[in-house]
Image (tube, rainbow over all chains, first blue to last red; front, side, top):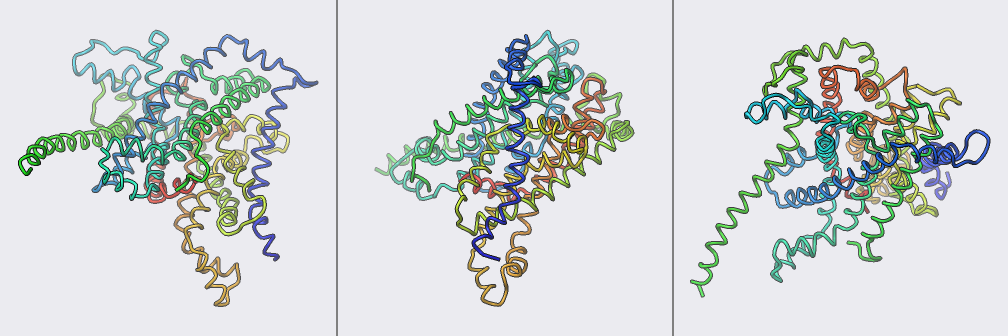
Length: 281
Length: 281
């Protein structure tokens, strides 16, 4: 075979597959969202955005992302720096900390349900300590704050690991000489973190944040397991339109809105954390 | 001079000790943060249905298989479990067969359009991919693969393929091309050199990325719930029965979801960081 053609033959399957199942469906979803069977229309978007649940689910999705992502960023940075200093037991600790990476969001929701439900472990613990007389139902419409906190904790628990893995890999790529030089010039550990680790970690931070923020706008199963309809989010609304209301056009419209939000945030993060040309390790 | 240094050294040793204590306590606390919720799920799974619904909860499992037997006997669960395994296995095979050649091409050849191809792969990350299930549901009905295990596996392969390409790219990049060239001079052609020299070296890594693909599919909720109705996977089954199913069914289901993930993450832990390190650049 002509060796010049070989690489193209090798990438052909992926390219075809992604064209058919990634690019083409996006054309389809746009078509579905902008048409009502006969021609171009904005009515799907009007229906969706004028529904009383839309502003609430939009607000909830953003609030959740805003509450969860900064904490996860701080937590994963802390864990990553802790792990790099470790000599004994590093592998074991890393394994434990990355366990949630393999856990489904639905399973994570169920796990935190075991803690927050009425006969759950939080109530049992508080009852055992004599703090409460009878178990309270945390996950009800009377305590929206607790529902939010439960979902938030489940999200932090589940999805910090993905950022941790990316950051640990990124820290591993920073040459040790930089830290040695920093030490020679008398930089404190905190200064070394601020002036060496953080700037050198930019590409990893970029990837970690993009991935995490997109996942945050996709939040679905955790919310379904813990809040159900008490805490509507965008992805849940998409699901409801598709399944309960059997309105494919409206579901496609919300999907496009989620997509637009995700792309906007991806661009913002890439711009904010862009790596200067020629400044790679 | 010496007096001065000892004066400084003593409190600094104290602060170092305190710092060490805070550090170890932090590590232990973060491990508990990951493990304790999992332990709670384990307690609930290994308790009788009555104990799961009772209050207050015991903090030690009673090692009763009542919940698990109930789970296994619940109508449709075993089929859902079988479907989950089937979809994940198909995803695993397809994503490696389609993705690995592209990873090899990226690591070994310079060709026109390489950057464009990389962009296509990276682009998939900036999109909430489960949303693709919506337009694909329509497309699958047209082609007659709606509500099938294979149709869902195609969507899950789209989720897993970018990882498969990037991971195999990093694996092949880690093997010097000189090894291959030596095999050529010793009478191998491209195919036999690949079989005899490269394949044995990358096989463990390929297995790791296959396992990764399996977990991605096993955990996926949204697309599974949208695309399967009769042939539901375990995640889809649990999600659609969240409102109606008893607590012990949810917890046993969550546990069954978590177990393979735990084993898999343990199996691939060595590769987790190498994979992400390269995928970042």
